[in-house]
Length: 228
Length: 228
DNA sequence: GGGTGGTGTGACTGGCCGGTCATATTGTAC
DNA sequence: GTACAATATGACCGGCCAGTCACACCACCC
Image (cartoon, rainbow over all chains, first blue to last red; front, side):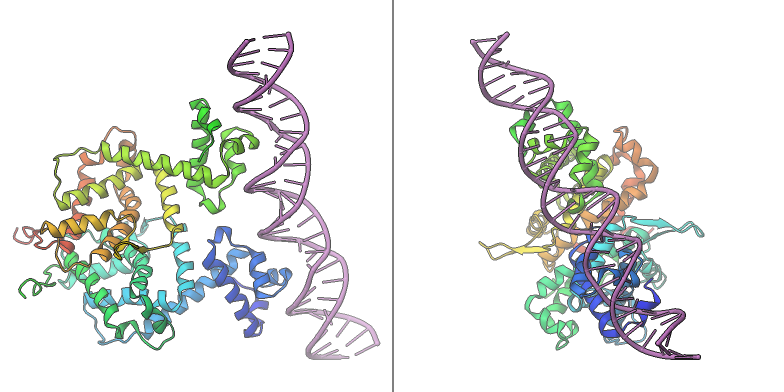
């Protein structure tokens, strides 16, 4: 955790430090990130750095907490068309948020990617329930609920599917952004939301159709496609 | 490329160097791998290292070529039940190979994972055809063939699906191995093939059912499940 | 004025790094 | 044996690193 001294700093100075740290962590994994590079980029003395943070891991953790907040912001910025999303609308929303985050904060997304690859535990077993849970458990809960609501096929191995969704969520955002191509800057600048762009939504439709057909108990996907 | 001197070395010595290099590259990404660590682990002098390799990237490239060969070995070790695999049997085989490789050569798999994450281009556009191709193009070709054979739905966005399969192939192996659990050592030691283990095959069935239902033109998946 | 506590500073230390090179050793051909 | 090439060696160099610390600065209070 950053020191009290750091929290007392004028916001402008804190932002300079954080911008420099984000640039460094986006370009190098924590393992090979350099304190010297950060302090010189931020324009502060090395001694000051160690008055603000215990070490570089401390700063890294602080940046991760910023990423977490920004993610919530992005999720909340997406329009919510209904209070109770059905199962696959919820999944779409989660993936949409990942893409929107990638566009609006590519550097933060890059830091997250470095972190994911360094944490090599693919899943863990809950010591209380003895249940196996992949990652943070979001998709696990999503799938369990989906089965309860008769939206997801009961034969689906929940934990494996959760893991699959997790790696898709983590990996597909940069690809989709590349596909979106020249629209990305407009979305990044806030002039456009990926929600309102038909090209982007076509890609999402296709991805969701594949996932929904794969997971749904009674897939209705594209059945009209061949009858055209 | 390693020097002539290196190729002239007695095999035993070369193996010592390669073992040390593999251990180092499996534990650290190329960026933060250490020549000193490798030479001390291999028991050779630093000067010798630079008689064998131009630098650490040179050695890394050499190890990658070894990985490539071992992968082919693993693929060829899988039983081939038919000369012409149908579309989804082929996909199953590819994923099976990834898992078998992860079990038999976890260190090599880890090196590959580091490499994948460092090469950050998610896809590229072929300058001749103008066609977009994900990764090495294997899955792209697979899906195109699948559509021609009426096995895969024509509405599937081939390139996006190829990218999705690629990240699944790259990410799911460690997870499946963890699920297989205590069977892995027996498979690693060659006493058992993952093909012959029912637990492993159940997991594969489930994964393949999800993928097949998601991609197939006329999914027959588990339709008997609910009629039981 | 003087005292005190919070903050800023950058030269310095010790360590690890990649890479070099003069020298030593070994192998081979005669 | 001699001569010559191939190979092995580790001390050494300059560079970058994380982390420290003695000192300087500044604001506030008495």
